[in-house]
Length: 156
Length: 260
Image (tube, rainbow over all chains, first blue to last red; front, side, top):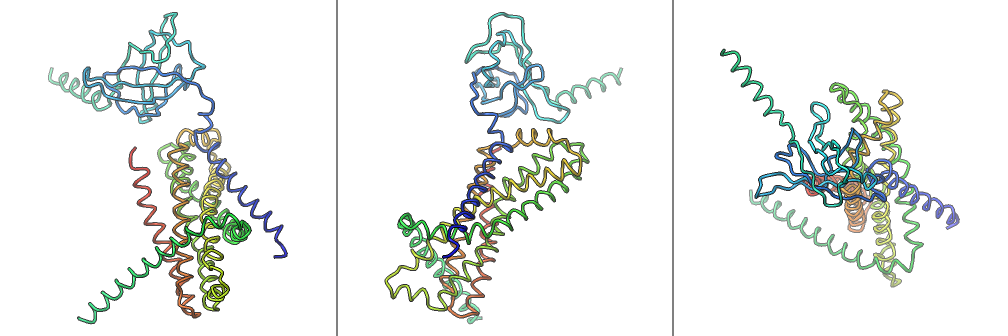
C-alpha cells in the first residue's frame, strides 16, 4: 500500500465527478432549477372541454409562461373539466375577469392555457376562480363541421 | 428419451440450488455491511478498483454514445422540421435508458469480470480457505467491501455517462449540425423532469449496480477452483449480468414510466 494517498485522491476525484454529473443533470438538464424558491398561488378554471391539456402543461399570458397546470379533474355534477393552475407569485396582478382559453402551440404542438387579462381592478387571489373560459378546439370536431358545411353547400 | 428427461430435471434442480446458494450468499453480504463502517479503508480500495478504473471507459463511451445519438436524431428530426427538440431526445434517451443500461453493461464487462476472476482465483489458490483458517470471515473481509463499492460506483458512473453524453450530443448538435444552442437547452429543460426522469434513472442504475455486483461476486465465490472453472465463471458473469440488466430494465421501465 505504497500509493495509498494518490489512490485516496483518485477515489475522491471519482466520487466528486460523479456527484458533479448528477448535479449537472439536476440543474442544467432537468427543470429542477425553475422550481427553486418559486412561490406560487393557485387558481381554478372550469372548461367545457379541456382537450389534450395535461398536468404540467404551461400557463401563459401574452406569450410568457407564468405558471403551470397542477391538476385536472372532472366535475360529475356540471360535466365540466376543472383545471387547477399554480401561478408564480411574481404575477399577482391578474384581474379577476381574465379569460382563460386552451390553445395549441403550433398545429400539432402541446396544448396550454392562455390567460387574456380583463379590465377589472381587483386581482385574482389564491384559490380564485376564472369565470370566463373558452374550451379547447378539438381538431376532429372542427374538421367534421367544416366537411359537413362544405357538403351542404355542394348540395345547393 | 428418459435420459433427456433426466438431464432436464437435473439441470433444473441444479439451477434452483444455485439460486438458493446465491440468495444465501446475498444475505451474508448484507449482514456484513454494518461491520464495514469500522473499516472504511477496505471500501476505499475497492472503490478505486471498481469505480475509478471504470471511469475512463464510461466517460469515453458516454461521449460517443451522446454524439451518435445527436447525429442520428438530427437526421430523423430534421425531416419533420423539429431539430430544436434534439436536446430533449438526446437527454431523455440518455437519462432514462442508455445511461443506466449501457453503463451497467460496461460495468459488468469492465468491473464485474475482474471481480469474478479475482475472487475465483483467490478461491483456486486457497486464499479464501486460508482466511477461514485464520478465523477471518472472507465474506466480510473480501466480498462485502467489493459489493458496496459496486453499489456506490454504479449510480455515479451512470450519472457521469449521461452528463458526458449530453455534452457530447450538444457538441455535435450545436457545433457540427447547427442546432440553436438556446433551443437545445431550453427544450431539454422543459422536457426532462427531475423526479420522473433523473431520479428514476438513478434508481435504475442502483438496481443494476446491485444485481451485477451480486452476480459477479457470487460467480467468483462459487467458481470451480480450477483455471477452467474461473474462466467459465467470468463468462457467466458477463452473460448473466447482461441478461439481468436488460430484463430488469424492461420491468423497471414498465413500472416507472407506465403512467403518462
